[in-house]
Every structure is written in structure tokens, then in C-alpha cells.
Length: 265
Length: 283
Image 1 (cartoon, rainbow over the protein chains, first blue to last red):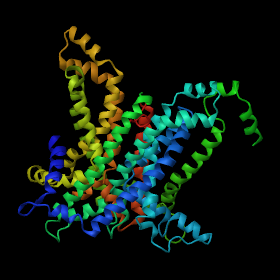
Image 2 (image 1 turned 90 degrees about the vertical axis):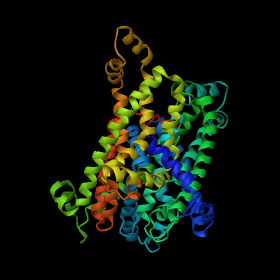
Image 3 (image 1 turned 60 degrees about the vertical axis):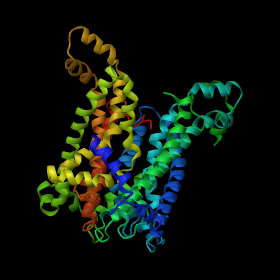
Image 4 (image 1 turned 45 degrees about the vertical axis):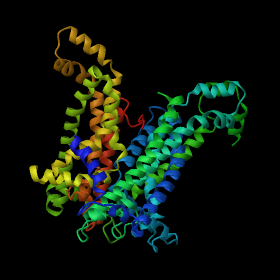
């Protein structure tokens, strides 16, 4: 298995510094191209925005799931649906999105009948509008999957203890549940960021012309047969991506340590 | 509203009996309704889209083609091939994963507990490497694979084993932690069983649930994989759906919807097998 995992990692790490004539930093310098810089920026913003929105709504939803009946059907259906959307989605999600709000989509037609026109502009295919919405379709479910165990780790005794000491709902959330849930919330947020940052399938199906995000740029450079040496620029971009993800995951690991203090299970 | 206010006043006995917050039922109902609408609408839209006949009416033609294997073979050979290849890949990748991972994890747990942390780190590492980065590095590796083994899509199974490793590891690890392997194996050893016998007669029968959930999760992941296959120019189910989408939107949306429903079915069954790692996953 090492061949299929360690070798690719090494290829990326070293390939980023390889040119036609041995070692070079030109691939790294190529990262400064405006197109690449802007796509990196778009990726970071997109991942950040969808991580925050996804984390907020995902935690609300996971609280609703956590308070529902343990073996109830609603809970089973919802957690399964979240699993499917978060990990399986990809291509299917892009098609679902087109079928809903594309030019011929169901919602588009409904709104048209009511006199609203949402198909005029190409908002669906723009990175800061349509992509945010479609990313939420896998970000919110992932948040539910990751955050649910933390919420379930809240012991009923803590609420009872608060009440015994005369505290109400507000005090419980402000002084007990809030502080306990903050580290796992931040950890999940970081995970969501890494997830959106490295997402490829959905956006690849949705957008075929431009390369507004970094993953598309990498794919483009990789399969480019026009310009020689682009393959190594792809490796440099991949390396930049690993650096960002590694940074986020390290932070996440640090937060995780803090989480396990109270919610070890 | 009056009911809400009165329960809020009724502290004491009532609030001790139930751990849920007051007004929880309303909050839950509203949240589920909104979430159901948000996530349900696209699925309904997909079903609606695939039954249009182009003249404002309804037809089931797309679904008739999709469910008729020979007809699909005729009109969408790539889609049919993609389905066959993806199912094959799922079977092969899951087999390799189980054969490789289960003995290793058992062995490490029994004989080399010091290596436990290392194995865990290695198994979970692919989680933090984006698939697209893996692909960039896999290109030269697959150049060699093509050279030695040919360019059949089935060889993607090696890359897929790496992708499913973290998820399979978690499921199997939960299973191994649930049984006391050490005591059981010592008992078997003292009765004269070989290590192979311990594995075959003690570990495997006890790990049924964990193996099943690892396999289910892996199958769902492999069937949904797009990035690696697409960028290495191989055809699998998701790539085929993508390609069909360029010529026939209705067909591709029908195929996408069926693949979602299939994955939902697999994971839903899994949620009944044991407790399912989906809801208790820790990252």
C-alpha cells in the first residue's frame, strides 16, 4: 500500500521543485501567477464562508437530531441522509443542484410562475453565489456527522446540576454547555474548511469553462498537454494545498486535545 | 403559546423528569421541517426533471431505459460499463482492505501494542490529504501500473483502498475494542490453537458487525468516487454519469438520483447493523 500512498506524497513534495533541468524553484514562483493566486483566494474564501455557515446551521440541526428519540425513524433517516450527502454526494449533488435551480430547474420554474426570474444571470455557476449554496449541501451534513457525538456527550447531570444551583436555560448554555462545546465546534469548523477547500467533484461537474477554485486549476494544469512543464506546476499547487490543509489539520488536532478533556467517550 | 408559558413557570418536578429543554419539541419540528425542505427539494426536483417528456407532460421513458439492462447497454454503453466497473471495484477494494487490515490490526493489538499509535496515524493520514493531491502524485505511479498490468480500470482498486482506509480503520477499530481480543486469544492459545486458528475461529466470527459496517461504508465510498477516476482518465460510475450529462441531462440526473438512493439504502441498512459508525464517528 505504501506505493499507492507514500510515493504519491513524495512525488508531490519533490515534483514541486523539479524542472526539465533538475532542481528549480520556478514551479513555486509560477504560483504567483494572478490566475493561481486568485483561485487560491477564492478557494479560501469559499471554504471559509461555507464552513462558518455550515457549522452554524449544522450544529443547530445536530442539536435537533440529538434531542430526538434515539431509535426513532426520523433520526435514522436524517443521519443516513447526512452520511450520503457528506461523503457520497459529489457528482450527484451537482446534478441535483442543476435540476433544482438550473435554467430548467424545478424551483426556477415555480418562481417564474410566481413572477420571479432567477435564471437570467448565471449566478448558479459563479463561485461566490451558486457554489456557496451547493457546498452547503455537503458542509451542513458533515457538520452534523462530526458535531453530533459532541452534543450527545453533554450529560443530563450537568443541566440538572445547573438547575439545582438555581440556574436557568440561559445560564446553562452560557456557562456550561457553551464552554464545553466550543472546542469541538471550532474543531469541526476547521474540518469543514479543509473539506470544502479540497472539494473537487461537485465543482468540476458544475463548471466546465473557467477555473475559479484551486482544485479545478490543479486538474487543469495536470491534464494540460499544450504547455510543457505544467504538470510540475500542478504539483507545486498541490503542495500549496497540502500546506494549507496541514496547517488547518494541525490546529484541529490541538483543539481536539482540548475537546477530549470533557467529552472523552 | 399559552401552553408554552405555563410550562415555563412549572419548574421543579416537570423539569427534573425530562432532560430536554422546554420548547424543544417546537424547535425540533421547525428545524427538521426547514432541513427537510432544504435537502428534500433537490431530490424531488431530480425526480420531477427525469419524468418530463419535453412537451409539458410526464413520461417514465428515462427510468424504463435505466432499469432495462440490455436497452441501456445499447444506448449508453459507457454508463453500463461504469456501473459494472464500479461494482467490481467496490468488491475488489473491500476484499483487499479486509484481507490487509483485519489481520494487521489484530496482530498489532495482540502482539505489538506499541505500534498501535503508528498504525492508527498511518491509517487516518489519507483523511487529511485531499484526493486531488493524491491524484497528482498518483499519475507517475499509474504510468507504471499501466506498463506492468495494463490500463484496465480495475487497477484503480489500489488507490481506492487508500481512500477507504481511514473509514474502514475506524469501523474495525470500534469492533476490536468491543471484544476482549487479548483474553479470548490467550484462552484459545492455552487450549492449543494456532495463531491462524485464533484469527479464523475467534476474531473473524466476533467481528461480523464491524466487518460488515466497514464493508458497507467502503462500498458507498467507492461507488461515489469521482476525482481519482476522472483525472486518471478512467471510466467509473460517477465519471459515466458526468459524461452522459453532457448529452442527455435527463438520463444523467436519473442515474445520479438512483446512485444517491442506492447509497442511502446501503447506509440505511448499515445503521441497523450494530450501532453504525456513521452516527458515532469521531474525527
